[in-house]
Amino acid sequence: MSLLIDDDFVTLADLAAIDPEIADVASTEGVTVAGDNSIVRQAWDECADALTDAMQAFGGDIIAWPGSITTYGAFGVSRPRVRLNQIVISPVYGRRDSTLKRWMIYNAITLFYRAASNRTVKDRYAQKHDNFLIEVGRIWSRLFSTGLPMVAIPLAAPGALHDYCAGYWTAANLAYVAGGSAAAANYNVAITWVDQTSGYVTPLSKGNAESGPSVILPATIPASNKLQVTITGLNPPSSSQQPTRGMAEGPYVTRTATGWNIYAGDPTDPNGIMYLQNATPIPVGTQTYTLSGPPTLSGYQLQPGQVPDVNYAFQKTLQRA
Image 1 (cartoon, rainbow, N blue to C red):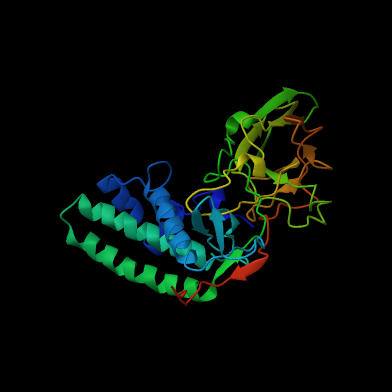
Image 2 (cartoon, rainbow, N blue to C red; image 1 turned 120 degrees about the vertical axis):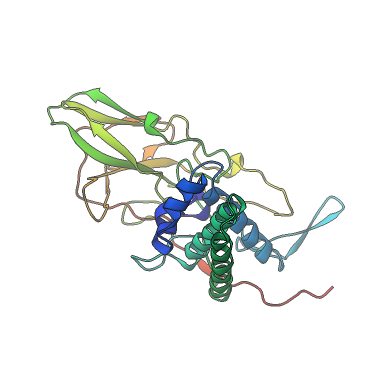
């Protein structure tokens, strides 16, 4: 399942599904909804801060570090029970959004109408802002009650948008080389990281050690060509690459990617299924991999990524002084 840090996750389509007027308002009022410097990015930041704040009240995390307070030099440092990279945003059940994502969607809509009302004299935007702000509180109350699904030792997706120095996965990572006799065809392509040292064995025995997928890229393979994929520009996750302290966050542990998998699918497939293209994980030291023929559209299917190890409830008590 995908981790919170892998992407912004909220899209214009998500917002428009709740308020169909949003696309027109965005165009009329010049509000950037998605991408860099956008409402969706601002909503991710706001939600991340709120989650960090809510989980800071009681110390100790799920990595089994002893105690809730540690000492660094002369200072007592409290540990939050969760890090953002441990939070799973994917739903447990299919064909629905998780409570966490719906809370983020309503936060984004509220910020959207706040921005729109600041650009116009139309009071109805301010009223929409107030109405959606009530919905934010309602869904936050539900999220607070149900808790957060958590991964004990996370593995971020390739090019994870909010991870530390994850690198970039773009169209430049796909190329086409002469070979074979297949006709030109269109595919969707994504990759994942795997940790074979402590979990991943086979596609049927993943040990919760395969990441969520990268951004899905379109690929048009010319006739008599083969798909070539490179991880140049990406940084495989590793605890040694991560900051070990900061903002009273205590120790930090992630999985280390030892290999990567390639998945491809038919862009016209209404279910969006993608299939594994390599028999065994490609070592991270192998930067480039060329498929032996046209992408296979059968076999092992792409999964959302790591599943939660626990569901962590928010604390409803205050520590004594």
